Image (cartoon, rainbow, N blue to C red; front, top):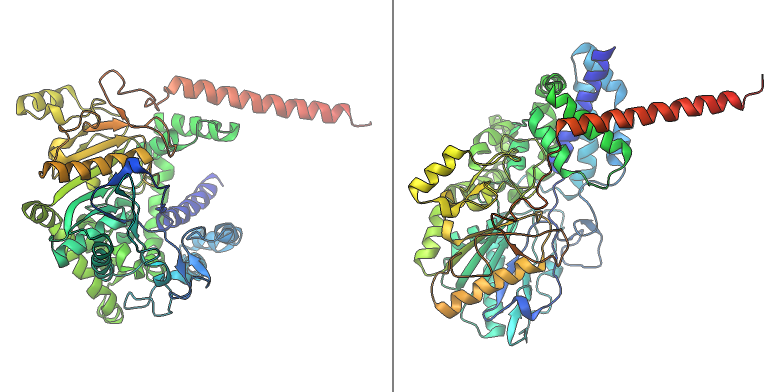
Length: 546
């Protein structure tokens, strides 16, 4: 019976893993206009995915099918599926045939997520999109201290479609911004998916119109969670799962969550998590080749833009899983052509594109975030990240320790010998020397991917303006207030940036509770539960007439 329950829980976990991989979010925000974050040259801000997608691309009054306040997965879909999953689940466990289970999971998710999927050519043939929001208030907005707020010109785009289609729209938008402002050049901020759009734009249209670019929380070598999901190479290990649970849950948690965290920590300490995770793998291997391709090709996998999140390490396996034979390749030929184009012209050429921009006189900068764990589904989930993408991918190469660890004494000594010690973070977790442009990369600890603190926008604006004033490529050494490593103390929108030093490097960063504290907490909560249960039984007996 214990094994049956364990398998049932494991298979439900597989379902949750698949869904959690699909339901990433990257909220867009226009912010409040501010002279503090304004730039002398107009900035075009290309945000990540999450803008509203309307049923009628040309009608803002039509139904919003996803984006904005409408989530990817409709409320109640997951709960309804889990209510009906037990019978096919048990059939699969007892017979080894998971067909009915796979059908239930795939068909339920497709019925909901499919509402915003694209066609077999990776295009919105149903007329959906957001053209109606594309060029609102495209006028001269030199209002903030004689400058342009960094959000004055934000490109709103359909985050599902081919990045080269959006790059063409970006090019047209840049020409219109130049026309209304009279500026010869613009700055670009490519945030999240916006970074991929910027790379496609630079590849296709060159550098003549651009003063400077900032790649902000970019997945320059893909989003690892997307790569793992699209390729079926989901990886969960006990340490990663424990780190994720211990570091990502709210400190003001209820008794049950506190108890569960301590229980997981104790299980991991005694290697007790390995067995259920092994069971998860055993079952996952039986279902992923059916469920994942079916769901993806009707939802996220139909979107060329989401394929641009699949890093080079995952690309070949992802294509093989989703388009395994000649029939599938013929059916999705239009989609595959778009996917391959981005991979071949941008993904494998990212460093080349960046260096060409620099050679053309464009200031290219990187703003990365770290200090969080990722959802433990990929082999890179142990690296520092912003909760969505690793600091290594954000910077195209920065070295990260495993979360909760620091560089070894030997590593630090070698850095001293090699002259790269100056690039190591004061908390001894990040080495910027291996990034594609170490002197032009800033790291902020404590701000998650989806948060957009005003203080970071102000920093980006000042970097842009310094590029204009100095007429040179500025570095992390040019700003006393903005050295390479900074941190925020909270997720508040207006949390200030603080300079990270050896003295404050670990402030608010000690998430790892000792196993003895977990054991004490576990026993305390267990005793409290038993005590309450006994009291309830005694009370019931006392109030029962005999």
